Length: 362
Image 1 (cartoon, helix red, strand yellow):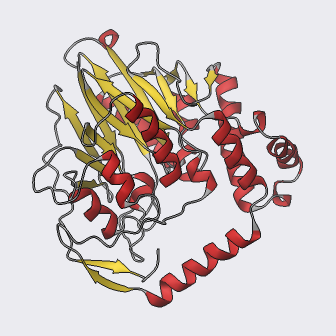
Image 2: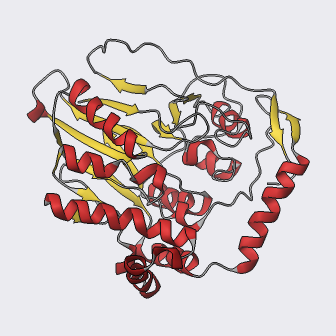
């Protein structure tokens, strides 16, 4: 079987997101010999681009599976367009109100007075609520992407989160600890005040072990696609604890660092979502001079604050044999045993940067 994985550009000059289309099977054959999947849809306009891309390059108006990794607007908004304009056979999305009384109450408040909810809580519900309504209107069945969910053909499966971990994360979203919110604001301020540069090379790494992302990001469905023994990992915005749990599952099955042919860089290359120890488990030790696999990151065209992507992050992948290719306003395609595509050529990954952003903290 062959495959094509397409990362479409999302957002404007300074905002980004994820909109991913892929297909696998006999790509030289008929549509019946192929499976088409969408993972996240970016903003509304990006949903339009996804629809056009699938019709033009996959030559179909049918999508076998749509996956919503988590309800951030830059991931979920465009999926409603996909459901409305294409024939979708199944939708994978979390329904937080089914796992948390607090979320169920918040959903009720959302329908009455959305402004009464905190921004993060409102956003966590609005996108999922809207997508569920569209799916019901279109007659698309919904299943939830928890650990051990597997596609009918066994090619795609979910490595996390577990239902228990998801419930823990929902509790943090419903009632975030005040000290955590204050800490995040303080760290953001200090990062801006202390921002400087540090030296890195193939062996010198300044990426920290203590990066933290939001509970909402850690709810991301982590998906593994395995086509003829080739492992391809999709991470959404998952952070260190979520990735660690997914790796526990893989390692119990005999997974070895470097087994991946393709990996999505979490959260658009944020330095807070990965650590050296996680990347050692996932990709292998630093100091690699050859290419072991391919990494893609969906990033905005401009990156004025060195956040998405962080050079620390792209360097960390590079020195483990997974050079990172960035969208930055253009589509990227990773493929194997696939037809040539007009207008697509060789992509140049990020180099190993010797000067990286550094705040002296996380």
